[in-house]
Amino acid sequence: MFGNFFSHLGPRILVLFSLFSGMLGDCGPPPVLKYAKPFDPITSSYKPSESVTYGCLPGYKEDHSKKYIVHCLADSEWEQIEEFCERGCETPQETRFTVVDQDYILFYPVGSVVNHVCHRGAEHIPGHPKRPATTCLSNYTWSPVPVFCK
Ligand SMILES: *[C@@H]1O[C@H](CO)[C@@H](O)[C@H](O)[C@H]1NC(C)=O
Image (cartoon, rainbow, N blue to C red; front, side, top):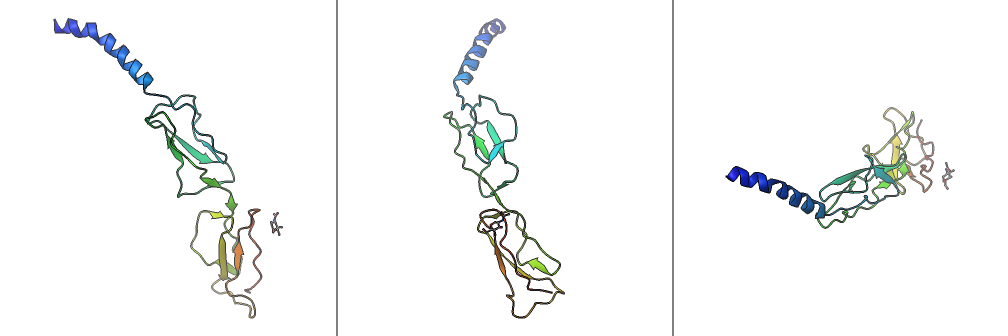
């Protein structure tokens, strides 16, 4: 008797459930960023709790302090995301006589300043700065380093 009851009700529960999950909302296509794009092909429909992961466009680097994943929230809105990719300078050049006086970092935004020092074994040229600085310029190149070691 119960078996009969449930087999009768079953399909209706299923229909109700799919109606309900359909009403749970849809965030639509994910936010568009200028300097990043979604890793995976996007679709036009995302349900709450689904997420999209972005990667920087070629030539841009991610600021690791910022978010690169957005979630479709319960209210069918995408979580806020700000641009997290920036263009910066390449790793500053070391030469036969000089090294960068700083631990390796992944990203040098415009305005970064690094100091150079003589390589162990190289000799400082008297009268020149001991730790000359270079700056990452707005055209993403480093300002020149004077010759100061030999
Ligand atoms: C970048 O800007 C600096 C300072 O304005 C300039 O001297 C240098 O030639 C520029 N480099 C390139 C590759 O445009």
